Figure 1 (cartoon, helix red, strand yellow):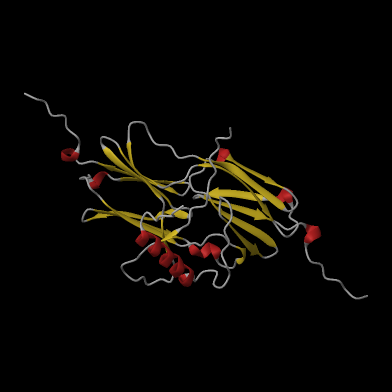
Figure 2 (cartoon, chains in turn green, cyan):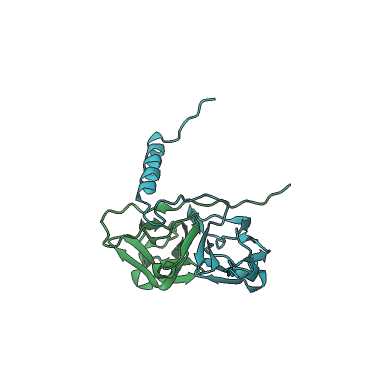
Length: 132
Length: 141
């Protein structure tokens, strides 16, 4: 039996913006994976085409805000013949439920995939309670 | 059979979003955006040559095969997503699996001079037009 899982194109979801932007570019929501281990929360986002220096990650009032800007200049002077996807910047935010140590957030961008490691604050780590 | 919607509002919102997205599409203006198999490809013309830009985030370069013919390009590979052991997954949106796609180019391309570049999750294929396929100016004798 063929157990191969076939990949489907994921439709890009447009970012619902609360504020209006000053630039006429589109903003998309990057697809994300989130997993939690005992001492850290990991957020992985797919942002194809974004350069390392154009990524901004910050934590504000318990919200994790991620922005990735695409360099649209490389598309200048190209004549589209056949197109299947649109391009734009990336933006997404998450409300953090557990306390994270903001000073220790680590970010790594590789092949258009951004990995964020948010270490949990000491008081938020799970504790084993001993019965006396 | 009764077709039930899990959430009728969600369905309505999705329709509205899709309509708005169509309306707000400023890039590529009045040209329709097609839908094909994975991975999504944009094809551009750059002077005489063809440029194919493929969105493929998080692929192992070694797991990507590109085969070229006179006027077809075959891109196949595997997109893997791995989670470390002992973690609890909260959200899983990234897709994983195998893909195999053949793209037909309407012009003759020089298969030996194709250049492929994979950077920041974008695969760029430079497809130079074959000499014999280039338009010629015919002088009237």
